[in-house]
Length: 253
Ligand code: PTJ
Image 1 (cartoon, rainbow, N blue to C red):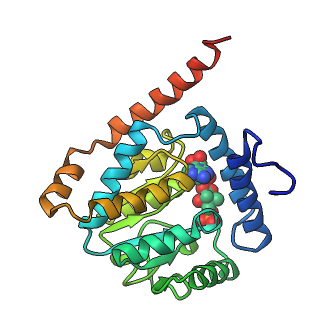
Image 2 (image 1 turned 180 degrees about the vertical axis):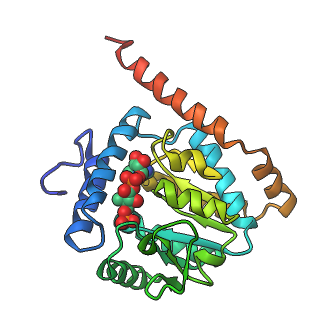
């Protein structure tokens, strides 16, 4: 792709991200539905100006605080996340001492294995998903699979690009759910405890940076950040960001 599209191309970053998802499908890491999800994400990223917005930053900061306060945080990895930010997931897991769990929506054992192998090759240590031993209540068999010591027992779960039903089921289990979703109107966005309306390729490096910065804060300071956080307000502001960005498009023409 780098040979086909010059770095100077105005859409280089977006095209490179798209190419990673295509490569993920070719390698058996990402499911074919991942291409559709990526297309939807690209359109919404265009709406938001392909940048981290102020509400996105607020959600990232609250997510960093929540992960630092968590007793049993777990990072969930699906096919799109594995294609786009696998190293960042491994690095974040190491930084906060959390396990990774491969938890995919369109489950095939081959794809779970490919993702586990990829995470392992990048330095991932504790990785659940190959041998699920429990079920998330309220979901059908394949989509409910989880692990003790992983998502099943977690108090805080980071699940970027999650399906609405599963997000709801995790919240019903009493977990705090942090998601990354460019669609502020999705059921996941509305159900999660913290929704980062940002592209996962920008959100993950930012989250790692914030966690490093915020490790020096006290538990009280971190708790104050999560208590102040209002997810509905962040979603409203994210929609407003989109509207303003779109309205501003023709102002100079
Ligand atoms: O690997 P699997 O089987 O677990 O499948 C993963 C996907 C993402 C295909 C699956 O969970 C799915 O179908 O998800 P949805 O319901 O399409 O939701 C994905 C959400 O993520 C949508 O709201 C998209 O707008 C959003 N999205 C897509 N790409 C990105 C994104 N959000 C942030 N960053 C992206 N790059």
